[in-house]
Length: 282
Image 1 (cartoon, rainbow, N blue to C red):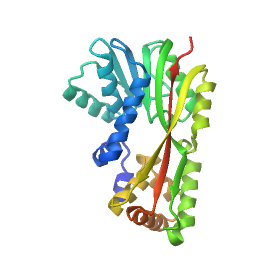
Image 2 (image 1 turned 90 degrees about the vertical axis):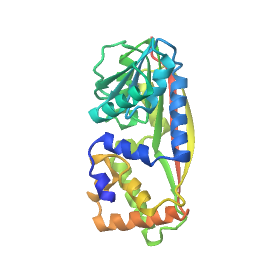
Image 3 (image 1 turned 30 degrees about the vertical axis):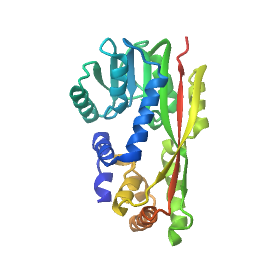
């Protein structure tokens, strides 16, 4: 069950699973994050907007509503299946002002100064080079254009286990250290994200850290284990990363112990995120 999802290579399949598994509080705060990103971009009717790493379109559709029919939202994503899903959702919602664009954050296939505003939710920090990603975002904005970004601070994630993993406590800590070492996005904290904007030449911006407490009490053990090992798609997944370093059966045992403790309410996750918004130079 866990390995099945970890083997999926496409962001679209992974995002589809995430969308279907979200409910209640989790879905609500993701929607609130998207609303906040759009609000901080100060979108106006007629604006030309680009959504970086649009995924299946949660932020895209909110932006499309904000700019009205006079404006447009270009949804950039590297996965054609994501864009297909996004455009289907846009059609169902009645938005004809959404434009799909296949491409990468660090090499946006758009001319300089093509957009009045840029929005991005949980995508910039997955770029191979965060500074290069910010610079590319600025390149496609008009002088003084607005940007609004939200990024999870995976370098500041804290797990509180209270000793509930027993003999697996040290192994779980070692697995977390390995993920931080092997995946660049896991090292980002608020200062590294802020520094990336400053290094990219952004002079006018504001930032706001926010805190989320994730409680998995009562969830199915298998679901928790699947989410932990399949936290990202394909080669980026914790499953792939950990299996290259640790004995597979040990990873399975530690993850199972973690999932059982989390389901029993003995584990809590403290996740921080950072909003960054402001104006492009010029």
